[in-house]
Each structure stands twice: as C-alpha cells, then as structure tokens.
Image (cartoon, rainbow, N blue to C red; front, side, top):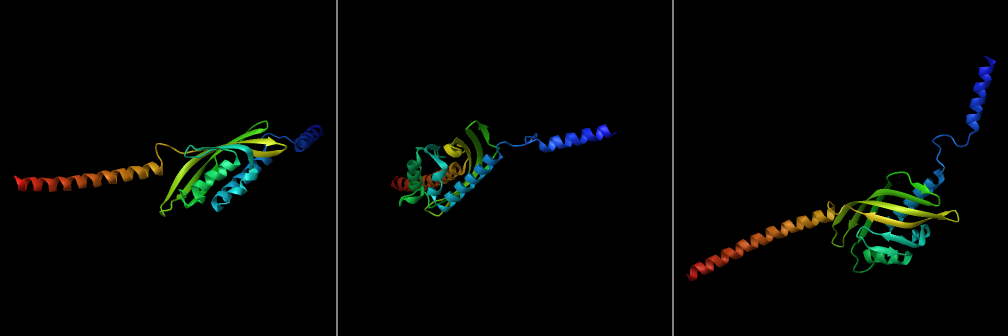
Length: 197
C-alpha cells in the first residue's frame, strides 16, 4: 500500500513541476499582444487618430483596402486615409469599425497570421450611413522581439453587400421613373399627333 501511495505522490509532484502540459499555449503572450494591437487599431480608426497605428506597422507595410486599392508604406496609408476622410472633397464624413478575431493566430517561426471580421459603418457627406461586413487577414513579423504588421488585407462580398443593394434600389427607382416619364411623353405626343390628324 505504501508503494502505491509513494507512486501516486511521485506522479502528482512530477505533473505539478512540468512546465509544458498538454493544452498549454506557447504563444499566449503573443496572442495577448495581438489582441491589444487589434484594440489599438480599432480605437485609432474610430477616433480618427490614424497616426496611433504607425508604431505597430513595418515601414514597408502593404495594405489592400476593401475597395481593392493597395498602399505600400506608412505615408501611403496616411494619404489614403486623408483622401477618404480628411480632404475637403472626402468620400466619407465618418467611419467606425468593430473588429473581432475569427480564429487563433497561427505561428511560423517569426511570422504570425491572423484573420477576423469587422462591421464597418460608413457615413457619407450627405448624412446617409451604411454598414458593411468585412473580412480581414493580417501577417505580422517579429524583429528584435517586437511584432509588427507587415501585410493587411480587407475584403467584402462583391456579390452581396450594401453598396450593391443601394445601386440596385437606385437602378429600380431610375427605371420606374424613366418608364413613367416615357408614358407621359408618349401620351403627350399621341394627343398632339391625334389633334393634327
């Protein structure tokens, strides 16, 4: 009986002293840092403080935006953002996003890849707003024990999104208006030619 007790205590002690148990995540600190990055980027975009994102990016970062425009380098990102929101002829008057991670990041040595979703809210100078679900994926590179974003891609469904829905609605409205106008003009022409006959 003593032998079983000693064996049991030895097993418990061995398990308690093992640093790498099954299920332990060797990248838990990295993942926590990535979650902080995501929060920082989300907050910076929502505040319109684009420069707060710069320290998280490599100088040669490549970003593909949802409209398929590609920027290379931090100054190009700043120019894109100013064109979108900062200029007097900006396309948008406001932009908000709410982002989430879809799955745990994958690690390949000093490279990490993560992906997720966001709900982006666009406010146009007309006052109209539109929400668009977006997918994103990011590649990070660790240099000198610091993770930096090397590449970031955004995409939206080209076949089913609010922009297309708005275009379809406008097209239907335009067609109905054109048809109604055609009927009115046709009626006027018919009356005029009928009187002359």
